[in-house]
Length: 237
Length: 237
DNA sequence: CTTATTGTTTCGGTGTGCCTAATAATCTGT
DNA sequence: ACAGATTATTAGGCACACCGAAACAATAAG
Ligand SMILES: [Mn+2]
Ligand SMILES: [Mn+2]
Ligand SMILES: [Mn+2]
Ligand SMILES: [Mn+2]
Image (cartoon, rainbow over all chains, first blue to last red; front, side, top):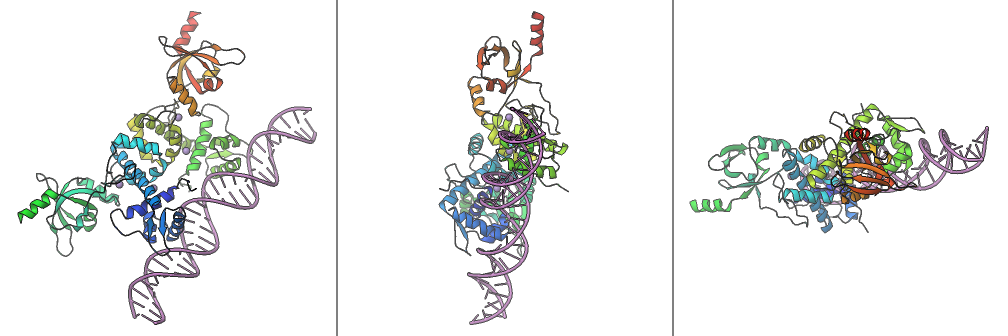
């Protein structure tokens, strides 16, 4: 019997393995895992063997790492924890969205299930965190919003910001300063020549502003296509 | 330079050493430390040497352990964390007072200073936790309420419950069930013969109830003598 | 098709915090 | 004052999570 509570490290490994495939398809490699966790490659090799022994991952030497069903279960519970904590920090303790990640990274391992339950109840069981990432339900179900990177949309495309990558706090601070938030209306105007920045219009028709977004910004913003608008545009042609 | 962040273990050791002398005078011994921390005596010996190396405690082999000024500073910050978290859990997340200790014991090591500050602000900088223990201020100052164990008071003594030891959760549940809380009025009626239970009257004059408290209960309740009442009693004679 | 290059794993070793068992110091009762 | 009990420390080891360097696979280049 393997009922032992997973260590914080194991929880982080599994969470990172899961997160890597959340908006992409390819499974994560050893080196990528090491980079994201900030540890040496050798540490990852060891740890992956341990995860495999515990039945949390599948792994053949020299190939990528994937989660087992048990691994996915654990990962989802950690992701739920992380994102609920982030949401709580913003809504109840007045954190800004660029401050919550590091705090949640530690708290997720320390709080009890009871704490998570009460927190979720107090917040009204939110479906997404301050960055628009979906919060898995207690039973492990997730509703992934259909979203595409702003950087990959065609000219004229419209929609709403549905997710903002929280990888770079600087970027989050910039967006906050510019008053760009989740659910903002967005329209791709075009791209400056020779791989230049992406020109985007943000805000409701009345008060919309134009921005030149560098690649890093444009690929951090995820957009949910506005079906109505798209339909209109097609009709307009 | 010794700026290294203290580990969770070190934080717990220092906190326990401090707490031991909070309502008593004698410094803590190796064995007592081991008991309170739930570790072997040998572990304490090792750890105490480490604490001494880091300048947190004074210790001569085979004698009791006392905190240095640095040690007291760290201890107070941990006690503040612990008690603020307990208060937060009760007031904001609907925990019962017998559920908060274990959760706080872990969270105190995981939350940031920012978290503590915002929590304290949200709670209105409370001066005591759900069990009546004083919460040190951010600058390390503590206002210790003058209190005596109910078990040590003379017959006829009156006052208010100002602290309830949170060592035994069962006891806390019993008191909650009997609706006995902080600030309740209390009067020592007498003691049953041959070292029997202590007879106490609890509640305001209108609706007061009589209890027979076993030693464990009577020594867990701390009472602040009601000067006015005492004065009245003296005048009544 | 052999050789670089890159990615991955293995090996030996570190630091922390815990354990049991053995030893040493202190305290107690006669 | 001293044997025996109690309390504390040391010795030797273990589990965990990490590291750098060396060995090894897989792949890309010549
Ligand atoms: Mn984490
Ligand atoms: Mn997030
Ligand atoms: Mn603790
Ligand atoms: Mn308390």
